[in-house]
Length: 253
Length: 253
DNA sequence: CGAAAAGTTGAGGATCGTCAACATCTGTGG
DNA sequence: CCACAGATGTTGACGATCCTCAACTTTTCG
Image (spheres, chains in turn brown, red, blue, yellow):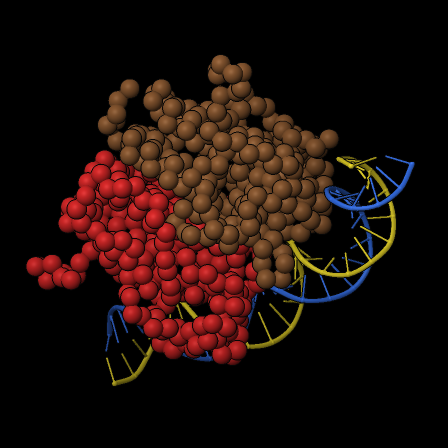
């Protein structure tokens, strides 16, 4: 699973392979998106909201998040980005970035031009359908987030976020257990689920006292996943995807 | 702008034409999505969350909304659907509907099978790119909603919702003013922006006393749009779309 | 080792929810 | 045309969740 220069295979390919088998041609098409690399340190501002956007990114390593700042200076974290994600698709429809982009760990990004999607749209209806499907999964995850922000209390919000992160990590790390490193500050967690850092601290403490999670180092372990899923009404949107409607291949393997 | 049988042209075509010029072939492709009609009365449950999904809808007339019910019975309205919208794209990636669907006015829907998108994906890269772009606009609208739910107070939430509805209506009703019929109950408004009907009533009253809106009949008039935009930090995501990255046409006019 | 960042804990306060009574609107049948 | 019932909207009193401010502790990293 490693290419001949010793590097690990593309996370994007790995993520897409979680859902369908890819032909060599399709892998080649995708790898064109990852020809350039750009390293970023933890906490780097990669893009401000409102800037002109001329390229998208594939995340090769690290965690990042999109955010907006409100008039009073507070921040809302809009979505988390993990290795294998394509960042910036929604901005394609606009001339200026709708969200800021910041890294929460050291990260490696692969920038590619907007036009880089032309190849894919024109040469592979399967990849087109797959990219649309990934977009649909993301869409549903946002709906879950809306539900969370609109109607759930602090404990459920944070528990839900932790479960979502875990399931998302599993799509590129197939046999991950229930423990993972959580490189988010409590400020960032709060900004993601609409709470303050103070209340995040209290609530994480409560979740730990209740025996739902265990924290040590920068790591989190989900102790009673089933019960936490129940408490937070969580559904794993990443687990499986319906590809039955995909068009017959115009460019068969 | 009317076809020979006297009916108004497709809202879907009208909405897409807001953004690009369409060829006759493309209009034909799209019209295939609207071959069947289904009438629904106000308040009809069209689909429950969790049901198997075998088709999507084009909205021909009326307002609808997607929602979910929480464990305690409360409801979160996830998105509003207007004439010209395609409902169900996100569900394509799943075997079961992720949201319930209900009408808030009498409505006319055009159901079409999942496979109905094949034609479009395979025969028009322009329409494919356009559908993706619409999806991206929707995506950004959801991000705005997340920001609203996570960090804005009741007055801004409701004001923002009203502005969003107005701008959305303008995409299919080009020369609409600042007044429109609002066929949502205060329960539904509350479920959309994460408040209770009681607080919606209070807040609408406050917005009216402040001179931002005027209510009469079932209609709302935005009185000081600029100031309300400022108060609610509103940005019109529907107004314009960047189509510059669209692939060169494989099937030119 | 020391400074800055991140996390914890307490006290008091603001926003919004809950419950309840009442008012108004809407549509239906007599 | 009126009567009535159910749905919808309004208003008040009270309470819960979460925020703000602030002091303090722990961790991280140069």
